Length: 241
Image (tube, rainbow, N blue to C red; front, side):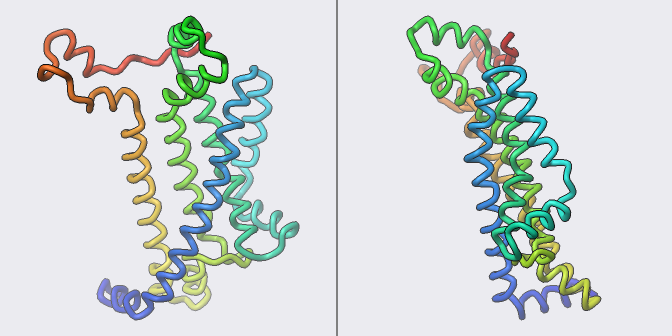
């Protein structure tokens, strides 16, 4: 097999490959999106106490270490064949990195900032959404990046439980011993994971408060001396005691 053979096969089947690609993206987006909606509140819930955090992280950690095929098969016995089973599996697999990184990010906010927020009369709810969550966004985005990359990989085994996506081409190639079909499914999935990681990484840097301060233009020209050094070095987060 040569690259020309691969390009020719991919071009001749571009309609089908485009359909598989969109199905793959939809399953991943649905699973990770649901995990984000559930994982952030669970990460916030972990802030209530040490035992709550241990319980939530233990449950999500157990879900993370279950083999992906075993997870999908168990869900298939309950939910049946189809994309819904795949999305449920992606949801469960994506929970742990989102919950853990949300909790860690909230914990890393400096206690002095919380004291300052309390001093100006902010309620606990305001402290959470106006101080803790904005400063924890880089950690939360890291969890989202990890979850997205994991989900893209797990989604390739969707055909084993009746799902769609790029995995259909991979398993058709394996069954027919056709390397062109295997590469046609595997390469777009790998590129999708790389693009998702790079794109979410760029978004993470834009949401980072320290990076935003460096991008913001300073009045009266550039920073110099100690002010310039302070602007160039972001503060080191401290764990709240």
